[in-house]
Length: 402
Image 1 (cartoon, rainbow, N blue to C red):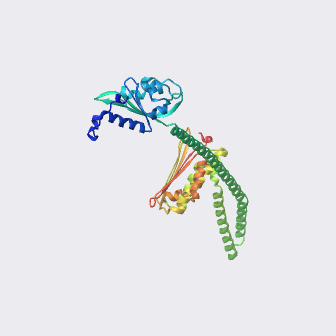
Image 2 (image 1 turned 90 degrees about the horizontal axis):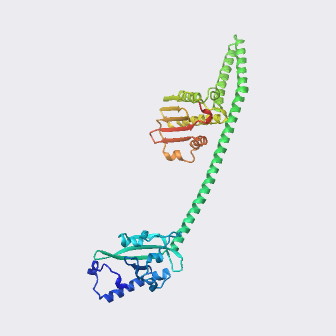
Image 3 (image 1 turned 135 degrees about the vertical axis):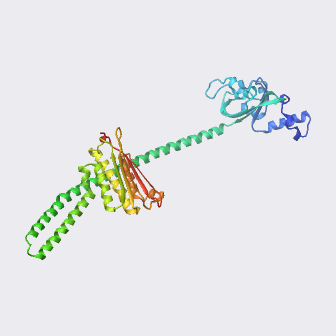
């Protein structure tokens, strides 16, 4: 049977010592039998011309049972899912019919007992004098490899599932922390509002009454210079106390936020900052016509979050930037879903990204948490010696629709 296999001996004869045909056949037979891979040859009709012991045992046949049989009908007739495998689609046969070598590891071959096994096979045409005579096929049982790949894939899927579950748990925990943070901010703002009102109503009223009494005394001691001077000094101290009290009330809860809304409060805060720091400045405010500050409980929480973030932006410029100029831009676009854009830029010392991303930068972290709770985003970019720019993007709550 081996004599039926034509080999391209002419291409390698220059490197081999010529042997008689019988000696060469014996050497080829030993080579085929010594390999652990299954090897068989087929002619132009797809019939087996030779098969080594490894292939026969792998397929569950004796070698004489395979010789002369159509190999596709014998071992490759059906897909793994039970569908018929047409011979015209067989990559093994296409190696000699179309001159298309192949290497396949995604199919099954069938044993004599009707069982299938995962196989990797390669098929190469045998050419003699430029004429295709058939093909040589190598087959390897890769059942264990496929089983290992399946186990690895299953382990990977299980790992992905666990990672997804843990990510979901962490996302939920983060959401709960943000809810808690927002609740604490709401409680703190409510407490600030209460304290500011009590200071204004109680202490403010007392100071005003005291100021009126001092003025009354001052009018009745015209002929006593020492008492007059004392009354004037007391009046000045009361004026300072009233001014300080107003500042404290404003820090706790700016009344302009309640009386005139967020847009006016932001512009007022920017003007206050500019007057206090005396920096060169540019202030741009543009609110699309018809877009009112958000109202209702959610709108009030959103507004105070924006206001506090803006305060922190300006505070960072005053405390850290060492700037000589500041640029402030407030822009609110129009319907259908209005968005607030707030930018504070300075020409100060700047800061490296590592410092801005530091977990100990609690001010930056707090601003981002405030913005994130309402679906907003805060970005801060800085370069040493080139200043810093902070940008806030906040979609308005549904109540803000014009």
